[in-house]
Length: 232
Ligand code: UDP
Ligand code: MG
Figure 1: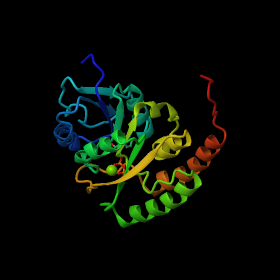
Figure 2: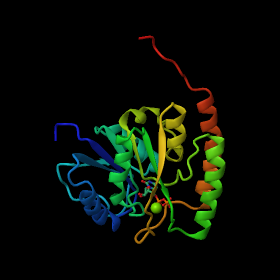
Figure 3: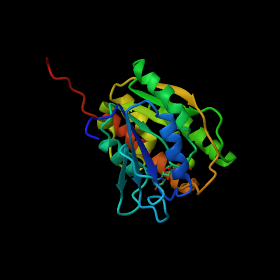
């Protein structure tokens, strides 16, 4: 494929062997009729994730030497994207590819970043509660105003990718970074499904504590970012 596609879909994958064949089929169905590429980023999986992907002209694979984390996978995938619009989606089937056309429609209507929010989450009570508190605090503290940044399903104009900063945990602050750079953001409800195969890569300790520390870092970063306009 030599021409740049309209849409690049970026999928972070870490030990998702049962999920990838189903996900690939669902993505292909959802993107029918849209010139696209799908960038699977294998984040050092130790199972058969890579072997279970089917190669095709629109499929690209980035393989990390070792596990580097979800933010690294999303950052690398987004920076490799060639499409005018970059879609981010989880690789565990919790997000539904069927929502992608609605996200793209919002970009066409003028949004720079479209954030899905999980109207009916299919996660454990502990996860839903901690996430609700985290969203409440973070959305005010970083001024992103977004109700559910933990929902990976997002679409953004590729120009927004340059506002992403490569640090561990960055994926939770994509709306804060993009909005902080002055871009237009909208939220739409998306489907959410229970994880059927594989396990969540996060527990309370490695999410709540780190995300709180990162929040201070992002607020500082946004307060000190370079803002300039060159005269025409
Ligand atoms: N993931 C990744 N690297 C990691 C941890 C997670 O690429 O170190 C991927 C994972 O395979 C999935 C997505 O990031 O596609 C979200 O992870 P998970 O489903 O465990 O998060 P949760 O739904 O529990 O928030
Ligand atoms: Mg998940």
